[in-house]
Structure formats: C-alpha cells, structure tokens
Length: 244
Image (cartoon, rainbow, N blue to C red):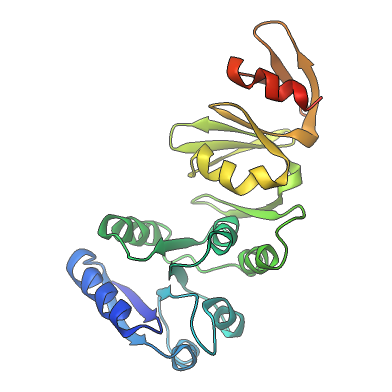
C-alpha cells in the first residue's frame, strides 16, 4: 500500500482529491492531509510516507519552498497545481510529475501507477537542483533530467544533439550515445525550443548548435555533430535554410 500525504491550502481541493484517490486508486492510503504547508512540513519531517501530493501556490510557504526545507526526501512527489506555464516547464525539466487542477481521474490513476512502477523512487538532490535552477533562470542552457526505470540522468540541454520520435517515447542522442525516454517528442519540443532546438521533421527535433552541414540531395538532410543524418521535411526546408 502506498502511504500518501496531501498538502494544499484549499480545503475543498484536499477533499476532492482525497475522494478521487479513495474511489479510484486502491493502492493508495491517504494517511494525512494539511491545508497549512508549515504543519505539513512538520509531519513530513517526523513521519515516513511514500508519496506526496503537493500544491505549489500556497501562503507562507510555497510547494517549492517546502521541498527546500524537507530534511530528507525519501518519497515521490506529484505536484497538484494550477501553476503558470513556466512553473510547469520547470517541473518537466526535473522529470517530476504533476497534475493540473481540476485533477482528472484518468490522469490521477496514471500518475499513481507511474509512482507504483518506480517503487516509490525518491527525488534525487540533482532533480531538485534542476527544478530550482530552471525556476531561477529561463534563458540560459538548462539541465534536463532524463528519467528511465533504471536511472535519472542529468544532462545539459546544450549536450543533446537531437531527439527522435519513437511512438510515445523519444530517443535522445547525447553525443555518440542514445537514451530512450518515456516522453513524447512534443513534450521535448515544449521544453527545448527556447534553448536553440528546432523541429526539422515531425519525427525529429535538433539542437541547432550541433548542425554541421545541410545536404541538398536525397530530399535534404542535416549532418549532425555526432555524424548522424537527420531528415528535413519539405515544408520545413525553407525554415532550415534560414538557419544557415
């Protein structure tokens, strides 16, 4: 059984989420809930939990500030929030999970299942570093957390050469190696386009800093810094040529 805690400054949000968990997530036991983030923090630092449902925008102590003050994060976190787009992007960069309010039941079940499959994998210090760095600075090259069942690898976005769609997964090429991540290419596009990435094809997203050459034959393709060839679709060709 997953021991869960809810922290949200809105009582009705707590009641609604707890009702949905009790009725649709059999593996989850809500052991406590707090509308005061300060009281919730005290509970976390004194009790063992597996999963925290955490609101972000709260008086006195935001969800991000609360995590800063937890002595040891040995539990998983799902943010429940109506937070702005940039805050969501920061969460995505750190490979943490979130649910937008109002919380949809199917999305809740999927998030809980993901937690269960990870076997209550706790947040790493590196993930928190990525989260807070992204919140502090939106313009420079960012670290991004690449999460798989085996590990969470922190890489600089500038080191990613390109990304290739593989159904609901994305193959991320970092130098001469690659890593299959359970995120869609669209999700990576939302994260990386502000950091010199460009969609050359419905299946490819490239780091423009790693483009070495544009070959005109065979319909047109890019030669990347790792020697790989990336196709350019007909309707993207003009935009690609402008990069040169």
